[in-house]
Length: 240
Image (tube, rainbow, N blue to C red; front, top):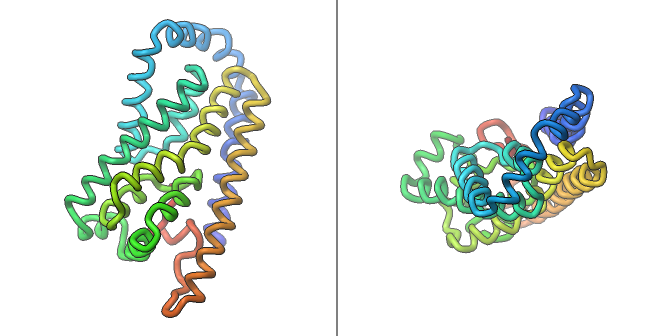
């Protein structure tokens, strides 16, 4: 649990660390004067190309298992906030289907070799309450997208429900990540405040919801006591 708590604190502190480094190193002034105006002018004049570029960036990074916080922050800094949010969510949702479909094709043995044996508990949860469990995992800002995609792929969840839970679930944290990037490059403290507050609320809400779910599972006949929250041992963790 100490390791899990340390990782949670690290997740909560990441936005604050990024903000501090951005201002202390002088990158904020450089971005605001040398790069941001040119990128915004290009984006404003080429909405179609900008949308296509963003879509493929998020689709490919999601399919490759790269946490979306990095491209989301980057695109929030260089493109308009609404464009970055809409295309990031649609691109990441589409990209999640690639590992989902691959896992559904290759089956449990490959997933077990990659992520360990205890993934089965998550498959059982998704089979029992597919949409709500996937939604909870997606709402948590630090969820391991690749593991969630592949575990869902070997479950019985309907692909449309998987896509719906993914798109809805990643929306709040994606907005927070994009606002973080936008606030850093635009020197906008309101963007930064909304971003940090949103991430804190998402983590707290995910934790409380998961605790309640685990208590119900533990109290049910045959309920187990394993899998502490969303932060679990290395072979079964659902966070990056």
